[in-house]
Length: 353
Ligand SMILES: Nc1nc2c(ncn2[C@@H]2O[C@H](COP(=O)(O)OP(=O)(O)OP(=O)(O)O)[C@@H](O)[C@H]2O)c(=O)[nH]1
Ligand SMILES: [Mg+2]
Ligand SMILES: [Zn+2]
Image 1 (cartoon, helix red, strand yellow):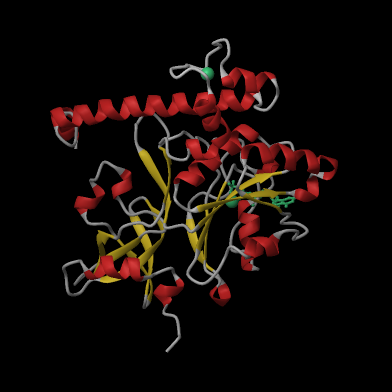
Image 2 (image 1 turned 180 degrees about the horizontal axis):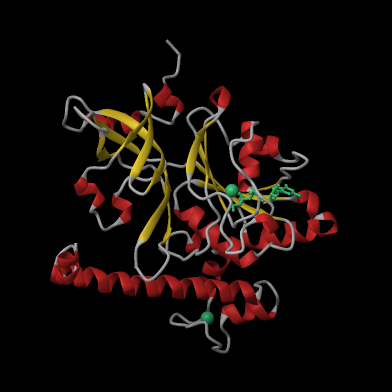
């Protein structure tokens, strides 16, 4: 009686079962999205893997968050001929999102229904605290538990202590684990976050070793990895799409992602969580309407002067906050335009189709 079904091994639980039960349609069956490329989905259902298309109405959705993405649970309707299609997207328990690349003010789903996000960075010269802060903000905003993974510890040598203490500044309260996918240091500690039905995603810049860690955890070369000098001249990433991997021995699910090139902020959520030290200073600032911009007696200035708050940290907080504010203005403008001209915006675009 205790045999776990395929769906349960994939993370299916009462939350999804209840949402599924509320849907109309007799022949619907549930499945999880393993990968999605150009509108074609690969899913796993109780009976095994299958391909499916989203229905046209879903494909036209302008907000990418309304479309199913990797990690989503969906309801599938069988087709009398051809591929089955996705009839409904079940409500997410968590969503890792980022600002889409380019001018469009759209959020983009990186992955849905993650329990844990490994924010991976490497302990060598590529190490960048400001970039790490961004990944942590995105990880925290997702609703999953972020865990900081400092990979390539074998290359850190004497700098190890320095890396660990500088990370402490930006990742207070976040589990931090030093790993080496080469020597296997720390890999057992990572395994503690895995478990039956749990989904763990890896994010971080290209080349930090995400896919190598995935291979280590799975114990097989499921993902291609490459040294940075072997990457092509245009800087293309070794991993080119997001994909879920079901681990052997019912250890759960891993999601590997390509390094994100553009990592823009999308929402305010996560920002205050990632910078609690700064938010506290706001509260303690003497002036109620302080702009924390060089006013004499400002708590922020005081903290920077006496060294409790690194000036770069304050700068990156301000940069992220500005970026988010700009996105909000842009989004408002687009929403306004949609109200005026309808969902698909300008008439011209419709004619072109
Ligand atoms: N020395 C050392 N090298 C590592 C370690 N982990 C990964 N590497 C190497 O780093 C290079 C990049 O690793 P990948 O796993 O391809 O990096 P990735 O993060 O998946 O990169 P993208 O797929 O482009 O996002 C490979 O040559 C790996 O062998 C480590 O712990 N120590
Ligand atoms: Mg990779
Ligand atoms: Zn102030």
